[in-house]
Length: 510
Image (tube, rainbow, N blue to C red; front, side, top):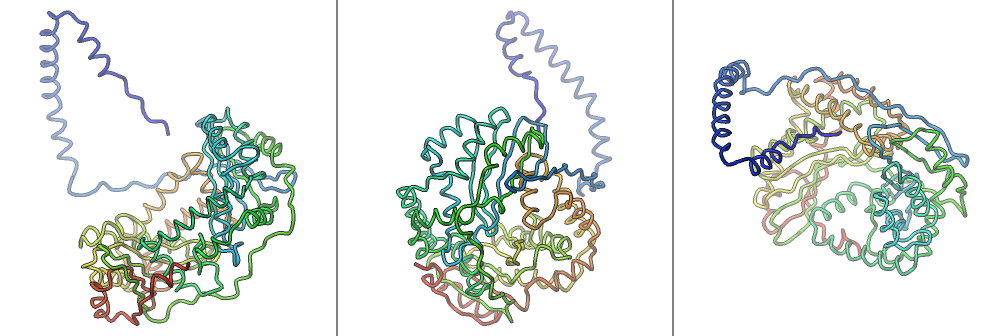
């Protein structure tokens, strides 16, 4: 969005005053004083009338949400089968090109963390350029290029001015199709990752997340291990393993381009076809291993403590197994979680931050993935109120399950979600992100219209029903990382459920 331009009044006034004759200064001051007095006299009654008409003790009422306009997506394929989705967005001469390659961390198997390692290596040298030369050319073009991998895909994203698109796409093609994966660079990146993994021992938030996923998802489930792997799996990575993973996973049949910006679908097809149309699969395909075990929701409350001596804060994570993204109650669940912990004005944040002052922030959310991810309510709290914070967490989890939310709270949560959708469709990057996120679940962009409609129809009864069905209260996994010498007795006195201790060495595997 282009902001309103302000006239440089201040600069013009200063320039005029320094060059004006000295004898005019008194006249200018007198005129300004008279004008100010006149404006003050004229504005006082108006301000008083506005004050009388506007009640500042209550927030302004929300009007009806504007109709949602979703950009048109044109779909097709390149000659080798690569999927193509194009959104014309002509407001600025910019183009966002995102490549998604299905697979991601699900392809790791026993090579834990390999997908993210390969994704990070893509721009560490490609074609005839090393990492420095590649970044220098991108900078010269004013382009930004990023690579990464999640659980379900690997992504390469390019953003550039339309006039430099062709040159930038040449660089992107090298990154995707011709990464160098030099042995020296693989060793360097491997050492950096090993150092980062060792640092997790000193990061309570990382320890809590690792412990939570290891305990909630059984061995053999992809989410049991960290997406970035561990020290043992990382130490085994070499350039041959990186090349094999790239060759077996980067294949046209798995690839899809999302293009948003100042060009047509025909232009996008021609530009991408010239660079990626001859892309062919090589060697055996890497496929995700079958998921032979399914996570089960905890029976009763299980509390796991991880000792971090001297910690000024305790990290609290409370959760259970979530639900599939395609769940029919998705809209109602989103509204319910917005009330509970999904917004700044949510119950959890208001309670622990604003009312109690235990934390800088608390929240909750569902991890939406093709396989059900976790539901998690979490916060970092002062050590001396760890047990009190747990009481408040469970109080809020029970309250939204047992008592209907009031109509005003419900309307506020629905408005928060509905009014947030147009803001997610403003820039080229935002539109591309929405298209990519929905594509993971085979949903078109215009599904957002259906989503807005469903959110608007969520009732008080719906919120209570999905809270009862999906939130942990009597059955939950609780992980607390903190100074056990100071917090353990208080936690045990709550009698939440079985309490056990897990060592840091069991969590950060070397």
